[in-house]
Length: 121
Image 1 (cartoon, rainbow, N blue to C red):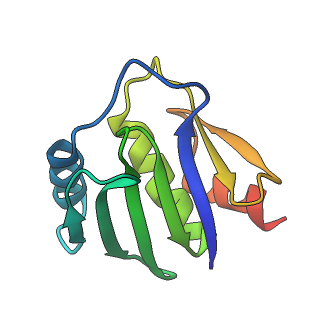
Image 2: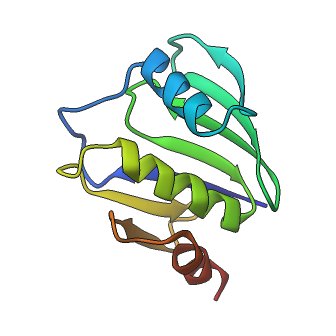
């Protein structure tokens, strides 16, 4: 388990509204549980998502463009690739760890296995 973030390289002029994010999450993973959906100082949506290797504790930040994820990196990579699919292609995203020891671009051609392996090596 570890803390990871999926964010734009720079603040974009794009953002997700909490309801849009929650709907997209539930559409892809009906088993996801929305813990909180309210604009707060730090998070606009908090969620739990049971995946293969862990239960992802995640949140969308109040700006609506960054995910914070606490989970096994293999599940984090799965969520990062999914997030890339709902973020406009013009917004460059990276996956990075809490210590910012590594940051990896998340593109439309990125696959979860390769992304996770980068953090596991």
